[in-house]
Length: 239
Image (cartoon, rainbow, N blue to C red; front, top):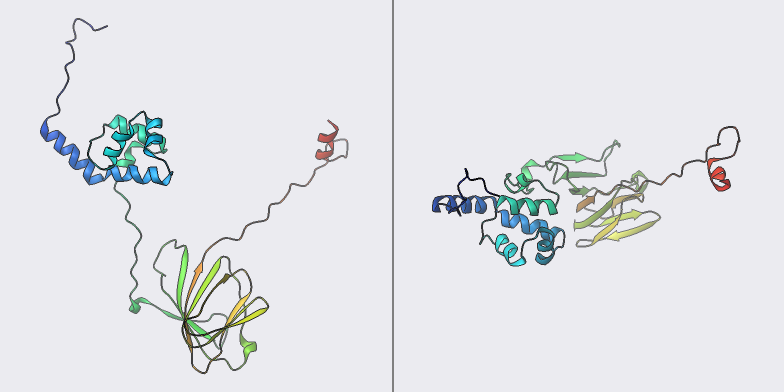
């Protein structure tokens, strides 16, 4: 019931300047695009999003394409569906990862742990933080004594593409010969090694992909219960 001291509320009209400012803010922050990305990431349709927010699918479609200006209440409803704060739509968007490496930035490093290295490599992404894969440019030298080749292992997978020359790859107990243009993809958790099998050095592009090895699940040992000497599992079965 309205108090007699309070004037009746009248529909407020938004000044044209404010409407223009709001539209500019929506366009600048690309709120519609952010909503669409959140929705597609969940594989959610407009109808489903509308059902969870109480907004019509047609309104949400216009919102994503920037044809309507949403209220903060509507944005709050949408943010709640995706577990986001309202501030998500107005914070600066993080820049997508992009790192350019010039050939002059690369550092040539020898094989480690040996006196006479059989290959040299150059990291092609050493300036990328928290990278998920490591690309290398590698040069393999002709080897007189194959016994000098030492196998190694590391978690994840490896891809190798031969740019020049002839290369021999030993993976586990098997040996494979590769020529220019050949490639191989293998489990790097298996002992592997490389050997230049030609008279001239071999050059290859190598990409290692990180993937931690699964840890074995340990079962808790059965403990004896007090005063009985029986294990906890035996006590449960007797209960």
